[in-house]
Amino acid sequence: MDLEIDGGVLLYVLGVGFAFAALAYFVRDVVFSLSITVKAALLLLAFLVALLGGLTVNRADLDWLSMVLSGAAYVVFLGYVVTRYALGPTHTFFVLAVSAVLFVALGYGLRQHRPDVPGRTGVVLMIALVGVGILLVGADVGTVNLTSDVEFEESVTVTAPAERTADRATAPGEAVMGTITVTNPGPFTRPLTLPQPSACLAGVDVGDGDVHVDYRPRSYERPDRIAGGESQTYQIVVRAPVPGNSTERTYAIERGADCAGSWSQPTVVVDVPDVGET
Image (tube, rainbow, N blue to C red; front, side):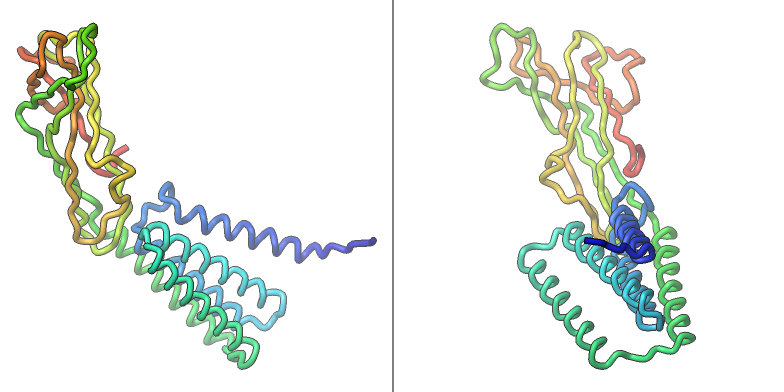
C-alpha cells in the first residue's frame, strides 16, 4: 500500500506538539516565577487568542491549526487549575461538566453559525487580549512577594523516647523550638515552598551527635500554595541527641550559619533562609 505523507501537515502536527509541551512546561514553577493566579489567567487568555485567531483566519489549514492550539491551551489551563488549586471531586466534576458544555456549544456554533470576524477586528481583539496578559504580568511582578517571620525560643528541652535502646550512648529527642510564619501580602495565589533549615550542635559536652531541623506539619500534609492576603504558620521541630544517662537535655538556641563560634553550654545553631531563597 502506497502511503503519501503531507510534509506540511507533519510540520503542523510537530508544531502543535511543541506548543503543547511549551504550555505544559510553562505551568511548572521552575521557570517564570509568576503567581498561580496569573499563570492560570495567561493560559485562559492563550485559549481565547488562539480561538479568536481561528475565527479570524480564512485559510482552512491555519483555521484548524488555531483551533487545535486553542484546545491544547484550554486542556493545560484546566489541568493546571484542578491540580494547583487542589479541587475536590465535586468541584472537579463541575469544572469538567462546564468545559464539556462549553466545547459542545462552540463546536455546534462553528458548524451551524460560524461568526464572520473581520481580519482587522480580530487582530484588534487579539492585541487587546495580549495587552491584558501584559498588564497581569506587570501587576504580578510589581506585587510584593512572600515574606517570612521566624521566631525561636531561647532554649529547648528534648526528651528521650521511653523505648530507648539501653546500650546506645545517646538517644534522639524531639521538641518544638520555634515557628515560621509565611505571609502573602499580594492579591494573587502563589506557590509555597518553605525554606530548608539547617542546624549544627555547638558548645560543651555535645559529642558527635546529629541534629535535624524540620517543619510540622510535614511537606506531604501542608498545602503547596498560599492565597493572597493569607498567612500560614508552621512549627519548627528539632531532633537532637540526649545522653545515655539522662532522660532529657536542654539546648540553648542561637541563629547562625555555622558552629564556628564558642558557646559555654550545649547549643543548637540553626539557620532558616527567607522564603524564596535557594
